[in-house]
Length: 231
Image 1 (tube, rainbow, N blue to C red):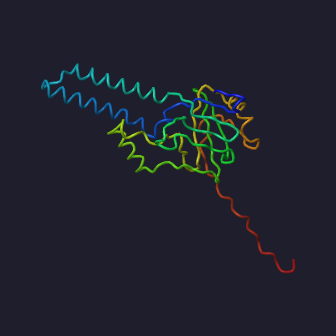
Image 2 (image 1 turned 180 degrees about the vertical axis):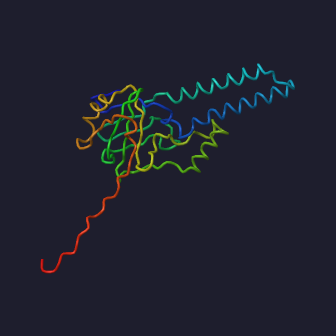
């Protein structure tokens, strides 16, 4: 976490690939390596007519290790994708590229309904719940998301990556979940105390399961008995 008095802002490292890649992008990695393994076996069989067992196991094992390594690197990579100041919170990585849009999203303090966090081994998990008056950047539909992933699968360098998953909130209720690294809940609470409104509290929960949202049962209006005449 970095903080400065000149800019009155706090910047934190965010863990994972959500700050740069769309939702479900990591699932493309084993598919790419499976295609490479199939292409290797087909070419080797066509050239020699027979693929030795030791060679096939070695090559496929090497590709599996490479795919696992790449998935671990992307799932644990850290980027400065969380920034807060007196105007609100910025999510996403700063870039000069114009496409795709919404690489960053700004959430003003009046649009935040509540802040909750829970301690994790890498730092903390921060939940930002939006108020009903917030401008919500909805997630792409399943059809559009499937189209983006399919295009990235067949043209990984030409099609693009699509909207980062970090910039679109989850639904019901609209909220963001940010994996903040190298920062404790006490440090984040202290850093945000001078930036957020005093009425907005930052609560610390005992475990991750407490972040699950439960809809309270609607209250029934009290029944009123008819008043007898003359009373």
